[in-house]
Structure formats: structure tokens, C-alpha cells
Length: 506
Image (tube, rainbow, N blue to C red; front, side):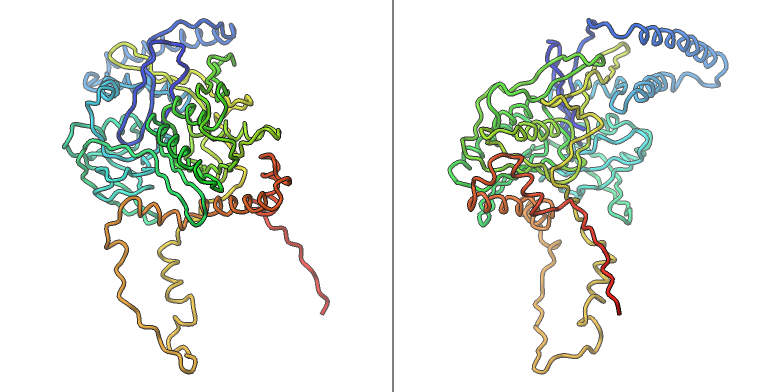
């Protein structure tokens, strides 16, 4: 998962961006003194455990040295894994970066690496046997050879993913330009095993996708990672959209697992007043470490077109912060508050923790969870996620078996010798070129996917309903809360239908 940059109190923080499989933003920090005094009892317990078990560790190492048949070849690797196991036991996002992994991260800051162009699921557990490709980047090396979103990488250059950390897997996917890496993936319900030889190359970022729905008068923005480039693109789009009296904006944050925290804050600043609080960080003693506020006036004018944000279980970290803070401000019950934001889709991932990378001896580094994020209303994100205003589960495509059955047995016409009406003539079927036979551009494929995307279509319907009622009776809906209540009453997407049997006497 892409990790937002932690609080900038420490001047030694240097942002590191890994542009290969998944986009991830990590901070590099030097050791710093702990100024706060944690609970003394917990400190004593910690010291006691460390003292007792350091002796056990020393005894173990001595026994290995004296008794093990061959203790030399794997000793260093075993030490790194032991430290990594300890950190991973504390929480799933803390880990130990060995010399090779840490060096790869340092090299990535100088641009001396090349990737395959996929966004990966960094939420995986180390014990998982696969690594999910959340999205392939358009015209990237992986896209060109045929990898697809939701493919599960199970092997990299002959080494299984089971037991391999996400950082280690990412390091293996990186390399020198024009060098090859082989991955094996499982695809679909059949778990079909496919092999791809991918040539590493420069990754051309495309963080933002924008469409204008002319017949609906609605704008659509899809953001897959938070970057400085994305801020400028969204700003220009908003400036352009203000020339039209458009009905609403759909912001797609599905499968967006983070990026630069500063980017998320600046994007929020395009919609919120200057000096608006976006998020705070708190340490293990619940002490506030840093406040992040907007530093620019908003681009939005007095136009009160609603914003519908699409979210799902892969919406995480910085994207949760943006969605959560905009929703928080829109819910302020005031007639002067013209911001209307509604979340639609499924519950977000719940990644609200901050990791810092701390260099240690032997050319290693520790990635340690140091604080948590809190939204402007003091609610945490960590572990809880953000609930949508309108729960809309994504409808999956029909499985191949069901589609085949529907085609051959799903209608009267599919039956042999079915009766035809008098004068009926069978329409002549024209030879159709299969869609797969035509190499379509990434933009065209995105358009096609959106037309069958039920979550996207639900957002379009809701915008139109809200627009129509505000045109006919503007005083009925003034605030965001009024709009939310009205939409839920007239378009109850997430409500179960209650049925009571009516008994009729015979």
C-alpha cells in the first residue's frame, strides 16, 4: 500500500517514491530522541522482556555456533528474518529491510531503477502465497505483454511468493533498464497459471483519467495515486468545469491505496477554505504530533455541484484521508456550507497508520509504525475504514459457465425447432469482429468498463435525481445532510426489501 509521508517535524525526513509494481511513498528518517514519557509500567515490562529474551537469543546463537552442522551460509539472512518476524508480529506494516532491500530503496530515490508498470496490493500479509495486481499502467511493460488487473503473482524469477515480504517482491520486480523479469500469475476463478516475461523500462505515470459525460453534463475523475502532477491536473479540470453549469462531479478513488500525503492535502484544498484542518497525527500516548492544513484558497466557486466519491476496499491511506475529510466538512449542518460530498461504493480498507524508515547497523533499516491519522472530527481511520453513504456492491461479470448456459438455454429461441410466427424472417447475422481481435487504447477500454460499472452508474443516477429536485424545489435541499436524507429515501440502494406474506383464503 502507498504510505503517506508522516509529520514533517523531523527535518531529516526524505520522501522516497518507489515507481514499480505498486506506488509507495516512504519516509527516510534518522534516529531521534523520544521526548514524551510513556507509561512507566509498560516501559518496565518492555525492559524486562528484552532483558530475559536477549539472554535466550544469546544462548540460541551460541548453541547454533557449537552444534549446528553448517551455521555460516544462512546466518545473516536468518538474523534479518528474525528481526523482521519480530516487527511483523507487532503490526503488519512494520518490517526489517535487509541490506539488499534497503539499498534498492536508496537507489530508487536517484531514479536508478526501472519497473514493470503495475500497481500492486501492498495490504497483503507476508504469509500470503500471492501478490495481487490491482491495476496495470497504460502502455507499460506489463500491460504490453498482457497482464491484467486482479492477476495474482505467485512466482518471480522462479521463486514462490509464499513467505516473501512485499518489499522483497517489489525489489525483485525492479532492475536495470531492458533487463527481463519472469512472473507467473493466477487468473480468474479457474486459477489459470500464466507466465509472462517482462522487460523492465521507464514507467510513464498516468495518475489521472478525466471524462466529460456530455449527455449527462457530469464530470468524472479517476485518480490512482496522489502525486504533485495530479494536483495540477485536477486544478485545471475544475477551472475548466466552472465554465459550464455542470450537474455534478464523480471522483473515483477505488483501488487508490495512497501516495503523497501532501498531494491529498492540496487536493482537499481545491474544495475547502484556506487553513482547513485535513488530518492530524497522534502517537502511542494519544498526543497530537502534527496538524495538516490547507495552504491555498479553493478553486471551487459558489457553484454547489455535488461531489460523489467512489470508494471500495482498496481505497486506503491518503485516499481515505481525502474522502473522509471532505465528507466531514460537507456534513457540517450550516446553510452557508455549500460543499456537498457523498461516498458511494463499499467500506474502505482502514489504513490509518504512519510508517517511518529508520536506518540501523549492518546496512539495514527498520520500517516502524510510529503514529496514527485522525480526521478533522477526531475519528481514526486505522482499522475502522470509512463507511459509504450509499452502499453499492460491485457487480461482477457473469462467469463463463453462466454466460454459456444463458446463451444456449436461456430463451425459447435457443430450443431446437422452436415455433416461428407467420411471416417471421430470421435476421441475417453479420460477421462481427471480436473485441479481443482489436487492440483498443487504454482510454477506450476505460470507457467500456465504465458503461457497465454499476457503482459508477449509480453515482450518475444519484446526481441526476439530486439535480432535478434542486431545480424544481431548491428550498427543499439546502444542506448536504438534507440531500443525503432525501436521496436515501427516494433511491434506497443499500436498504433490504422487507416482505410480509399476505395469506389469502381459498
